[in-house]
Image 1 (spheres, rainbow, N blue to C red):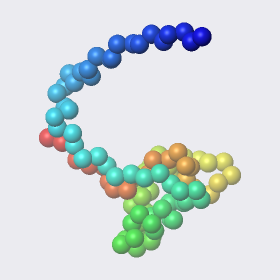
Image 2 (cartoon, rainbow, N blue to C red):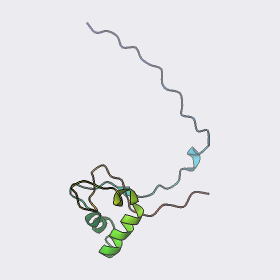
Image 3 (tube, rainbow, N blue to C red):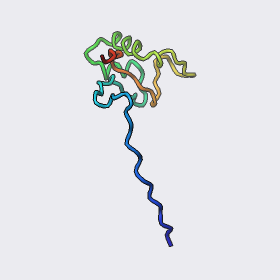
Image 4 (cartoon, rainbow, N blue to C red):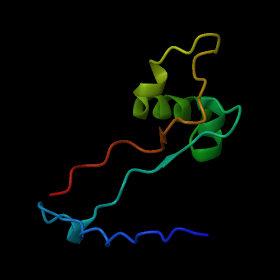
Length: 95
């Protein structure tokens, strides 16, 4: 015998107290690394038109949270699968 499951009422509509839902802005491009990726391999794949050293430098400047993080036993520039890697500089604030 099955016990009937009580159905919950639907949640209330989301509120938008700042009135921002009508003006969603473009978000900064990002990716997650593939297994074994480093900043250099990700730069080569995601910024193919930029010289290798410059591409790594750009990614590093846009991802300080990765560059300054020490990873015990891993070389600098190593990435974790959970990393968010930005592929462009911060966007200007919407006006």
